[in-house]
Image (tube, rainbow, N blue to C red; front, top):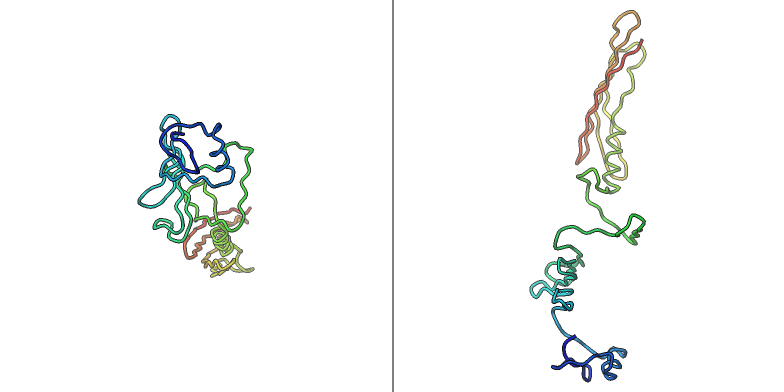
Length: 195
């Protein structure tokens, strides 16, 4: 640290805090205030800085950024972000992360993404409406319209199932279904041989 600590303030000159009893007493009692927009390490690399435009606090040179909820960026929400666009929680595979309160997750768009309950419930509702029951006895075709709801996630499905007698006890059965919800659509096609 550059500057002498005297009476709770930093002035020009150099004094080792470890040997300045007044400075030690003030720091211990919480009466020393250091005002600055940047804290650098001994090599001059920025360790902590404050964005003068947004008020965001940056920790590290390629930094984590903390926007206060009262600022123009936070706009009512405290925000943690990264200047490089990537944040990793934990360092080792044995690390554990616990979330207390609500964790909101967007719908997944990649194989490795986490998901939310609404998305899972929607997929469950889609699967539930794909009806592949065989036609009633003596009938060859069956058309069905099915609806399902899971935790306010709704889906509608259309299914066509049929049996074709190929003679000599050989049967060909088929099914085709389409299911749709507010955000997703799936289709299913199945063929089977009975002998």
